[in-house]
Length: 111
Image (cartoon, rainbow, N blue to C red; front, side, top):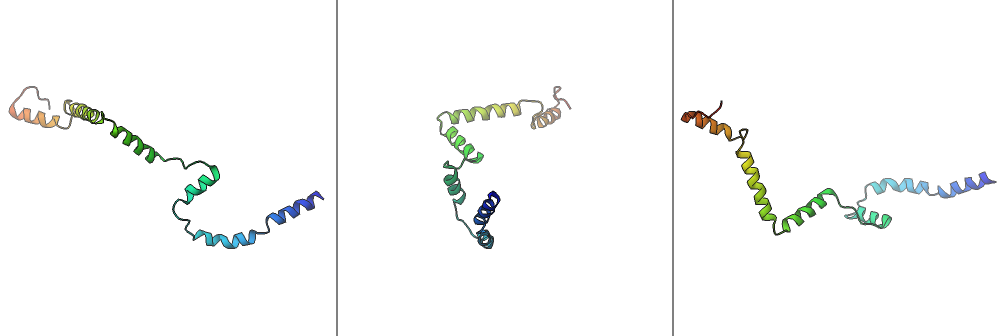
């Protein structure tokens, strides 16, 4: 008896499979419209769609730029980076300084 009941349940649950298989190719060509994924996720999980890394980075950048001290901090970073890049022997412009010093005959210029 248990096997017969199980068989009947399977038949009842799969009786609409032919209709689904017939309509499935039609759904592949259908455009669900904008926001479909968000609506499905909201309906199934009852939570908003999590933000991606770009949205989080944009929000962080907006918060940083809106701070009153941002201009001072950006100027400081630019000054330090410019000083470090031009004050070292390995700076791109150091070769030009050595060449010009060599042309002028200075002793401290290294080849």
